[in-house]
Image (cartoon, rainbow, N blue to C red; front, side, top):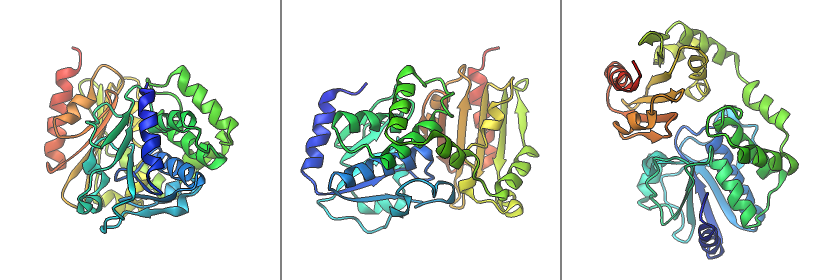
Length: 324
C-alpha cells in the first residue's frame, strides 16, 4: 500500500500546475493505455489542460477505449517547461522512448507497480504489491476524490483486467476484486470491455498464430517453451507487431510448462523478450541480467544480442533456477 502522505504530495504538485502531460512506455499494453487515459481523463474532468501520449501512439487493438482518440504519438519537441510530466506503468525511464529522451527532462511523477522500478522521478508512487498500475491509480483517484467518470472507470477496468490475465494471475487479491466491483458501479461494462479486448481481432492475428504454433520449441522435459517472432512471420500473416499481445499465454496454458518466453527481432537491431513463470522461477531476476525488469512471474527485456544468442542465454539462466 502507498503511504497516504504521497497522495497529498501528488495533489499539491497537480494543484501547482494547470498543464499536465501523461506518458507511458513503448509498445503499450492494456494497463499502459488504460492508466494513461484514465488519469488523463480524470485530470481533464478536474479542469486541467492534459496531453496523453506514448512513443507508439494509439494502436488498432485499443481504439475502443474511451477517450483514446485524444492520445498522441510522443513528439521529439519537449513540452512547455511548466507542464507537469507524469509517467505511468513504466518501470524504466528509457522505456518512455527515444522522443522522450530528446526532451532531456526527468518525469516529475512516476506511478507504477513494477518491483524493478528504481524510482526515477521527483515523486514516486510505486506499489509493487499491486497487480496493475490501474489499481494504483484507482486508489489515488478515489483517495483524492478526483472524477471517476464512466470513461475513467472503463479505462481502469481494462488496465486491471488485462494485467491480471482476466483476474487469474497470482497477485490478484481480494482488493483487486473490490476495485473491479467499484469500477463496474462507476460505469465500466465488463462484458463490452471483455469482448473489445479478447474478441475483436483481425483475421491476420489468427494467421500469425498459425505461424507461431509451427515455431514453438520445448526444453527441460517440456518445462520451458518458447517461440521467436520474425519479420517473415509478419510478412506471411499480414499481422502487425501490436497484434502479438497475449500470444505467450498459449505456451503458459501447457500443463508441463514452468517458464515461457517469446523473442522478437526488432527493426532497430535489438531483440525483445517477454518472459513468464508459473512460480518456481524468478523471471524478473533473469531479465535484470540484460537490463530489463518487471515482476517475479512476468518480466521483459531488450538487448543488442541477436535472437539465437539471447535464446541460448535465457535457456541457461532458466535451467539454473528450475528444480531438478
